[in-house]
Image 1 (spheres, rainbow, N blue to C red):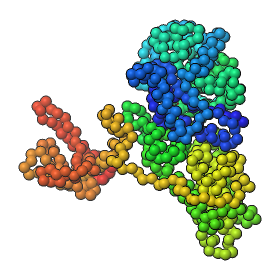
Image 2: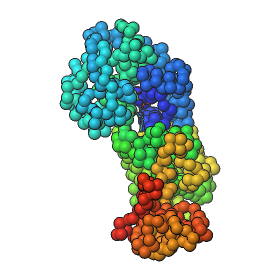
Image 3: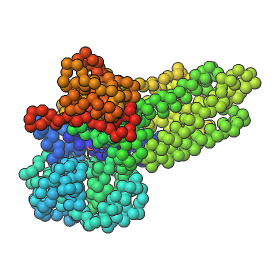
Image 4: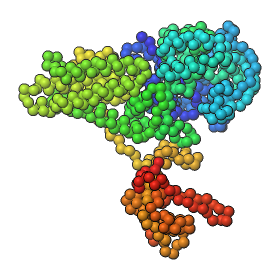
Length: 639
Ligand code: ME8
């Protein structure tokens, strides 16, 4: 069976980040999975290089568009090997074969009367590179770019998208798999409840020249979305290449929710107009945030794939991204979250299971995986075998449905079962009993066979780790040609393999000290005057109660406070002109608890208390302490 799977083609106005990495890694994983299932696969990614946004970015970088797109496209291409992503074809919309395909399609659609010339006045968002309808605006602004769109009136070419509205609704309703998860299918159907407008598909060269010229009017270039979507056809040689005949009927696209409308509405209607079948499935995922905040350049919290891989290793990154995001929903990236997965799921559950099992096979079976004697199986053994068969079926179903987090959950259920199986069967005890030797060999054979199957299902997700596992099991050769149907099939476990040295699959990782490793983006954030969430969290704010207060000798500004936080703290505060010592007793204040101690008038101050200050016209200032609700106990954290 053929599989054709694509990522969006990424704009070259920004460097690759976590979001691009995610979409491309899941597409790579899916393509590796389909290969494992026996398909011939074509996996395509690429870069979207025309349009206003790119022209503007090039101008800002003081570069010609051509030189600029070459530089950024190369950055994307260099990123994929770092993530162990192996596309079969990387397209650039500035490639000659793409320009030719776009012009051929424009000519065809124009000739058959689906493109017309007209005047249009509307509100244009430069960020979206399209006209927005009034309904899409939130408080008069584009909800994605938070800017007021500009009123623009100009003559342009239009694609008769509205003509295909009824057909599209019908197609979506008849094919539940066309757009998934269902929430996005519903979103598209709701949008199609309203009359669809025709799509403006040109830009006058007076306003923009960095685009594909319309073949029938050289005063215009093609609108970037009409150009970009066609990449999915160019890459397989539309219309004459045999690749097109083989792969178009099975085309599947992967995108995030931001570009749902062009893919679910523009693209199928364009295809219909060309007389082609629409793609088979559109898989839509949610957005990655960072520490629960939108990732953005201005916040300085953009995560770069290269830095991630350097810090955690490629397989933990791939595993984390697939496991952590419920496909279709948003997810939050944080170094705590990835460390937790690395240590618990990988180092502990899988890594320990693997090294324990192999060490025992080394010790009690002289490093050769015993053959499984079916006559000796006990109930727990059969349960384990069934669990693996079950895992194979469920894993395949979840992977096919793009529910990667669930597919991995199924695998980890078996990993937990295997860890329990070791405890229950205690091979080290069996080894002590001469009459238990046959039993011991069965337990070891089941452990080794199970690990082989786990290596096979992990191959699409963590290719390097899976190969390391197979090598250590002495099954490298069988592994390179392994197929999914071997999982759960005990006859297919490579027989009597000789184990190699036991590797450590995943090191346990410690949280880096903030001081030693400033959070990513800190430099940029500092330049913009912003701090990121991790920097804010580095402040330890606590509720403290004033137990005693007294004036500091020879100072008319300072008071010495004794605080219950709940340990006792001495803090010297410059508040003597705003408060008498008596009025502060028992008050609850905000203490900065992790400030380095400092000596003031000979007294060591262990922190500071927070106050609001307001300059007054007479040159003095009003100062009031921040008091906390008296119901809060001393020591409560403030965040
Ligand atoms: O839209 N979380 O390109 P683009 C998850 N050129 N995924 C994210 C993400 C995030 N925070 N940010 C970006 C374009 N992505 C057009 C596409 S296709 C014919 C033309 C990923 O560079 C996600 O896949 O803005 C999203 O759909 C895509 O990058 C947008 O990339």
